[in-house]
Image 1 (cartoon, rainbow, N blue to C red):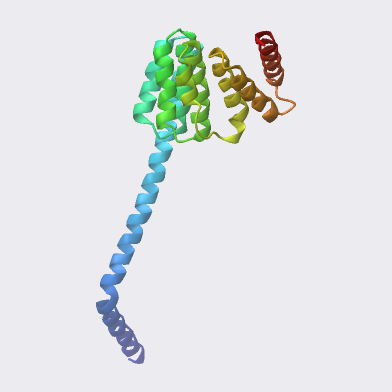
Image 2 (image 1 turned 30 degrees about the vertical axis):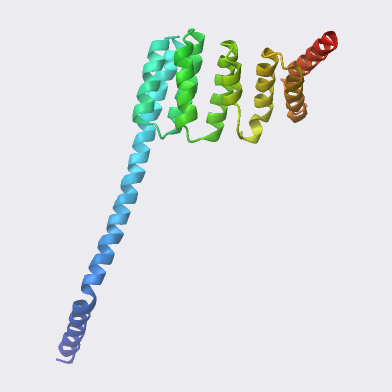
Length: 215
């Protein structure tokens, strides 16, 4: 009977505690379970999105291999609509821009690059898109627009490419001192092992000769 009595006392104590704190415990447990479910669901969603985006990116790459620009553009458009927040969408924009450029479709190339610039989350991808877009604008003789694209801050690793492209645009406008300053900056920032140093130096030598001839 002593054991039964002690057990009844524990049960009574537990019942009293539950009456006082039961609702609080229930809510706390519900919130914790809901949080875990949401976290698990989000991770599952992310994994699913990444897997599906990867499959679509492979389809896009198949279009590149087949030189089927229409297929590449469709895949890139699908990617941007369905998986805009993934890194695959930004890579698809750059790849689709190159495909369109090679196919002579400058409108599509610029649109893909602009999407990366406007919608991309990765600063490196956006920087690369800006440099490539400025190159197309250089070809189209839209020099001021190209310089506008290159305005602002860029990740440090793109300093050489940005300065070099600015020099190209300024040279095309016959702004020789400004072009020389841009190319000199590119040369100063380029590492000695950078394969582009020789070309930048050739540009500087050429512009030096042009300045002397003009003088």
